[in-house]
Amino acid sequence: MKKFTKKYIKSLISSLKNCDTKSIEKIVNLLDNTKGKIYIIGNGGSAATASHMVNDLGVGLKRRGIKSFDVESLSDNTPVCTALANDIGYKNIFYMQLKDRITKDDVLIAISCSGNSKNIIKAVKYAKKQDAKIVGITGFDGGKLKKKSDINFHIQTDKGQYGIVEDVHMILNHIIYSYYIDKAE
Image (cartoon, rainbow, N blue to C red; front, top):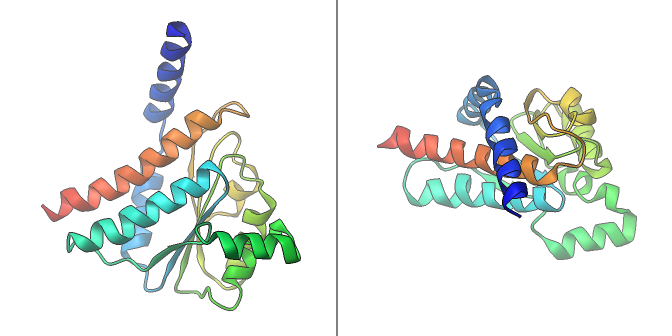
């Protein structure tokens, strides 16, 4: 266990050292200039990150009087997600929630380790047709999402390294959140 733990920590540190800080700066700049709503989507652990981002960027900053982002995770409503998945297919759970809602003033933050989740890609394609800005948060080789994003925060890892990728994605959230807090002090 000790050997594995040291290896994991070494891999996490390496991934953090290789983070593209320019993409983080671009994301913050986009958020600062967003006139509309920020939608966040993800599956599994990435859904948890989406929820956490809504907590931090929405309520966390608002209650401190720092920023008042209009932000929503489309992964959070279990009845809606399961009804859509059951009735029209899992690939439609995010697209259908964005349909006739997302506009050119909005931002879609799409979180996917592989960058190839069908429901993520379908939502991104729809959002792009509405001229919304796309922030892709990816891992492994980035998949389709990396290519379709206006801004991409990418953690290059071997395929299947979900833990490392999801850890760094959560740290990205905390970097952005902590930046706003630090800037306000």
